[in-house]
Image (cartoon, rainbow, N blue to C red; front, side, top):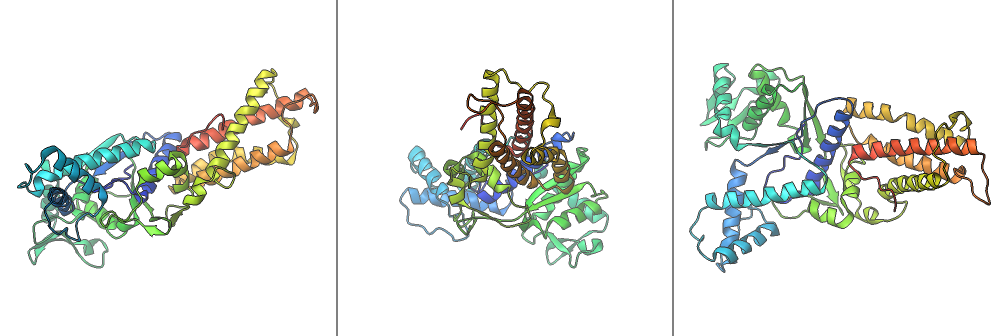
Length: 425
């Protein structure tokens, strides 16, 4: 599974975070049903964008030294570059003033990638592989793709550029894969990268990509087909954009809420849950006010409170020597008990649906529903006896057993989503 794969041109945005949460949860689901899953991050550190990033830092560094020079509009505007440039100016004074973008590129690349890794860690996402795009150039993979496309007649020269004959595979027009400047378009290294994945022997390859890849992804598959590969085992899980307070994310313009800022504001659990609550194909507006709520209005609080309440009941039960062992579930005849039991039994089906549809969002719906049914059960059905409200021991044992089962179901759902299940709140 490849997901996040953000360019190291700045801190992770909430939009990239959505793809990360979707991918990580999908990986959890696939692991749960028996797949051996590799989580992979494709590190895009080649091309014009990285030259622009290196030169963005160079210009910001010169500005930090006091030079009055314009900052090109197409460069990266974020304050993170200004902060890094000030650090360099403080450390080196003017000793780097004559260096080119090539000197600054690895500095900003390393800083941004370290920041990205730290953000992923905060969001409880651990990658197995970080695949470096530059390696595809270093080992000759990109040039080899061009050579093989030429050999098979699927690549040709026109107006100084190299074109891929995508029309031979159903496209409406052919695509440029190497510009007249000699720079490859992103389709070319993407084809080389996916060939690498196929050569590593994966049975199933899932790409979690933003909707901006909608037009280019079919061309990647066409490229693989032109190279003689079957592409049936490559699946696309596309996610739409995220807005916070109605503002679309834009890394280049510097107008975006970073994922770190959001985690700082509401916590990793809330961020993960909220980013997963809608279908990946739907635009998501992150409701910051709701995310801050410490009440039943907040679905994360609602679900976690149900788990904490369960743990409280079980602690009290242990103190009363009521563990639910041997509880006769046939005694659980109350409608609230029946509804809770039925929903618990649906968990395996929900997991199966998520896997088959490559759609993890039903997990949050399930967890919220289950929490609501448990809260209703708690309201309607006494679990443990008290001095003022005695309860048949057999019925109490059956209900404690039910509560234990509800805990397992909630913990399982929350664990798959990557959200903690607190024992007290």
